[in-house]
Image 1: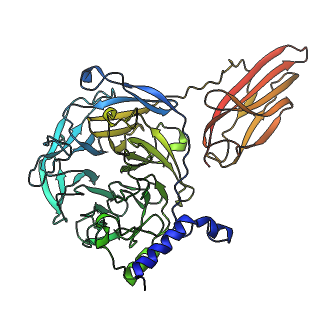
Image 2: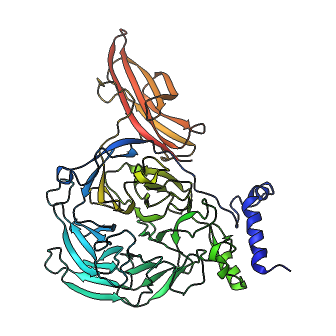
Image 3: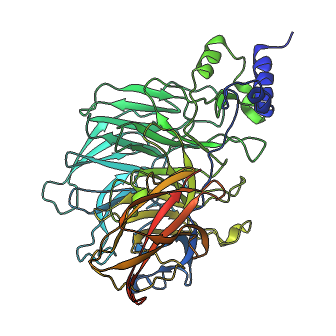
Amino acid sequence: MESNSVHILKKAIVLLIFPVLLFAQGEDPYPPGTIQMTPEIDLNLEPVPLIVPEKFLGMIPEGLTLNLPLGFSVKVFAITGLRGPRMMVFNKDGVLHVANMKAGTADEFEPHANDFTSQIVALPDRDNDGVTDTVIIAADSLRWANSLAFYKGDMYVADVHQIVKFSDADGDLVYEEREVFVDNIPEKDEPHMTRTIAVNDSTGHFYLSIGSFCDVCRDEPEHAAVLQFNADGTGRRVFASGLRNAIGLDIHPLTGELWATNNGHTEAVDSLPPEWIDIVRDGSFYGWPLAYGYQVYINFEIRGHWRVPPITSEDSMLVESMKRPVALVDAHVAPMDIYFYPSGNFPPEYINTAFVAYRAGFRGPDPGHKVVALFVDPDSSNAKVGDFMTGFWPNPPDQSNIWGKPVGLTSDSLGNLYVSSDWINNLILRVEYKEETTGIIEEESALLPLSATLEQNYPNPFNPTTTIRYTIRNTGTSAIMFTQLKVYDVLGRELATLVNEKKPVGNYEVEFDGSDLPSGIYYYRLSVSVWSSQDEQAGNFSETKKLVLLK
């Protein structure tokens, strides 16, 4: 008779390979035991040069480019004094603080087992030129500082073995007061030494992620988990379990829910297991070391994974409790920080979007080394992911030309996005949005008073249909309004003509169906030519707006 673990494994494999049979029988289109990768969308990236301020010339290779959506630019914000810059956050005065994790190391993977050489550095930009003025060591004598958070003016740093609270009474960005906030954090030199902290300002709860101490094995209760603490450091408990290495944590700005990114275990097939981006729910189990995806059991015959069986009935119940992940992305991209963009000068479709940094990728199907945007509804449905910033690895699979490893993400009060690279080139980039340039040729408007108004389509983003409303007004003359409404791609190529006729004064709406188009950014333009009764052109109107198709 076969063992319970073998039976469960066979069942999981059947569900994984033959989900189409379940669909044909009218079953749930995303049943337990299956993997469904999150759909990808095209954000129409274009290469832009990396702007290197004069003070940093010679400190980074020349001629580097990155790929960003139209209208975005990127420049170096900081290089000097950085070694292993990881997670970042702004304090209440708008000064960027960074965990300078590898400040005392000679090699990327040299551990800080007994040395206290990690730092927190403050990077003020007092003249507001988009480049740091100086590097201030805000706090030092840390062992392996990966992340930090501010709460009620104080700075909390997640070190490998404790959370440390720092205060800066005189406001000089050197934090003189230091006390241990939480001690006795489980520690081990490898494989997962990083600790990530997040604070829910509205509830006062602190969260700390602790990785597993092995690839796939039975572990201690506080390992491979997220812990929760009260604002005074009490109430320590395991908030969620089964998270092999949740490096990124953030609080959703609308729902107040805790989100995380997770680095999966090593598998024989480079496409497995997928990494996940998900809500971390109180009391929930996220699979490790038993399963991944949506209740898909690990292959326990691989490498040292045989140490997990036998599978108990309690194990089976834990796996059955796993909820569908919000997003699954390619294996081995090593998702790092997750950051919900709250507000600012980015286009509206990015508000409350989750940006995620991928630090790796050469072992899996996606080359990684990039920043992606995860679009998801507040109820965690309808997730779509698209590359937002690529180019850190220009020519895969040649690993010799990787020039950056994205890790940390945050934004300033204006909405500029900051991205840290913690090795090869130790730096912080600032992504700015100015305006979009498209291939659409705009004609100069010579308006009679208020001849037309074009409204933003609704819904936006949409799938697959959206409504476009516009108004033609009385210009005070006896005139003919010849109206055109067309849809274009980002290169200015005409895709559809929705209106092309004479129109009287009035309010109009047109439905656009994007079923035949891929996900991406598109534009629609309203053109109204005003002709007098003497057949002479008396004026014209044109306006272009953007619409986003998310399938």
